[in-house]
Length: 526
Image 1 (tube, rainbow, N blue to C red):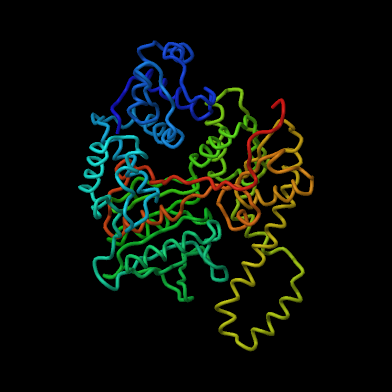
Image 2 (cartoon, rainbow, N blue to C red; image 1 turned 45 degrees about the horizontal axis):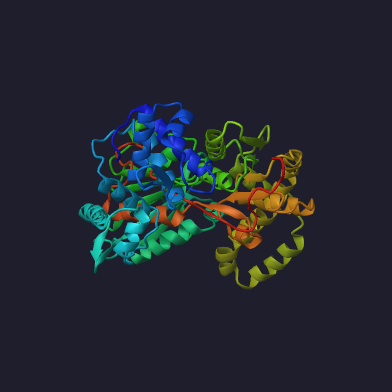
């Protein structure tokens, strides 16, 4: 952690970072003289000199003959990390400011974000030195420090992220997720990445994964397991811990957390909804909170991506703005765009009375639809093999097919008004959609309107779904596999994690998957 610095220095650092992210100083990659920077930022020359030297030590800037400073080729990668550190300087002061400690923080962050695969050797020291812009001695000292903490382990002449395994055979982890008797487990929001990642991590650690679903029936909490058996999860010697995924606002998550507090086992809580807070008396030492898809960070990263492409006026389109995650994505876009330049614009296009996303998807399933012919054939198949059809295919026929077809058709129809309104603003050069379902509907709309994507208008979504891949839509991937690995590692050995003692949820960096729907701004005069 960098040492505490005066607000003027921290503000000057942010001024330089924003200039780098928005390419304010052109393509020669040189900063103006320190005196010019100080005048533009409204600070003294001494203050700006201190800020420039901080960024030089972080590898963002490179000194040239002791006179001018050049922007490092890796600055775009380092700037988001430096910015995060600066924002927490005043709230989490530390006396440690050595370069090797800051390099250790960056390496650890890359480990947490899944940059280095488990059980695979790190790149050579030469490559590590290049990546983190430091000397061999500094890099080695940082890695040795992380070895002492157990984050990495030695491997031949380099290091690797160790695979954590269960302490005894026959162990298991219990996944708890919102479900229903007739519906499949609600994992569609992340395209099954969560479940597949959990299965893979548990398999590597030689741990069995059990799944227990909960739902409300007659105002009482009810449970059902993967095989249709009722009864909630029970504590047992072979249970290493519980992983509770909050995917629906229909039931207060604290009801489940209160239930789990009776077990003397570690619990990892993954919040995919947002908009709720944990009661203080429910916080326990062996609970860890994780977050994905609900903070403002994804919006901030998408904003930086579009700013680097030259977009200055964009639209955010969301039919689900009643949800906390939608508000947070919009606030992330606004914060980054207006910080870069107050003249930048983020137009918000939402419904006056937006539906709750889970309620909307659920309600559409009950709408009348012409599935009579398919249902007749299905019942005939079911007569031949009733047990198999009931267990394997009923959830798909009664839930997945209507959800995939009817709700998306209804969503596309209702979004027409928002798309029509967005199309009226000719100065807008990019549409940022609340999720990939909205982006897919926007993609179809723009195709029908003969609007060239991305030549005339760029399009971005969130979730990185298979459909966005198939249609070539740029989308934000929440890096679920990395956060799954952290949760499993915590349940297996209660490994110390970032923010473990601050009450803040652990969140990893996502990534923008660039496809054919985005490009540099091309509209003239905007």
